[in-house]
Image (cartoon, rainbow, N blue to C red; front, side):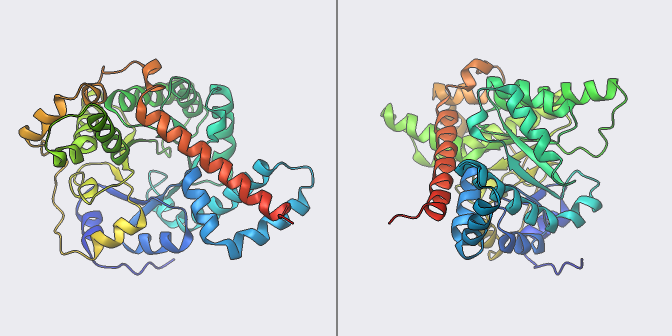
Length: 358
């Protein structure tokens, strides 16, 4: 497939730095444009999947009706997840050239495990293995929870390329990066191949910003509100440095954008940046010249503000939280509840097709 590239800051960054661009959506039309910007991957989660299906009702509602007829005993959830599989495979097909070019390190489509399985490590690993076998270039999202850490190691050992999700902090990134490393080493000890695996550890930078802003508001803190826009950036830079120091092979991935700094401040290193398509359009229409900013420390005055907030310190220090504390961290709870709601919304959409209101 010949790709016509669109000039702009995104393509310039992709050509001049090891930083990879992925699209934070599985919508095929958006993904085609992202590929023209230099994009070499894409991601999906329950919220993104529901949005994509809802925005292409002309395509997916008739398909839901077909599936309901083909699967007469299937639940609403089973039908909805079959649509997610099909949506994901459509997007994955577009990424096959990048997958071949990068030998599995890029060119992957992220599918997320069902958040309703979050209490069972075996169920998460089993579904991750199932999704990874749908096509050669699937990478599977597993949450950075206490249960998820066990599932991440197990799935990696089984040969699944894992994308850690529901992750907002340095301790979560380090714990899951080490879980991936254990899984890789177990495979290698048994003579199993790891050469084409492409694990990544996501840090949802904007969702950490959101949570720290919520905490600052609840506690009535007097501070420069602009400094709170840097929480996720500071945590990502710290996590990246920890990965380099510890020799962890998984790449860091930045997601959950809230501003253009979530791209510009993280360009430069061997990481993945995954902006929603609307942010890619904003960036690519600008005259910004990308520079290596990943290794540039966050301003001391900003760090003084952030380190004065105990909740940020928990997210910033590698030992700031235990795995048990990951489960009750505010950003974790809010994000998992949002993903569960998206699953419920998809169930309701299927219900309206197979059982329309009279």
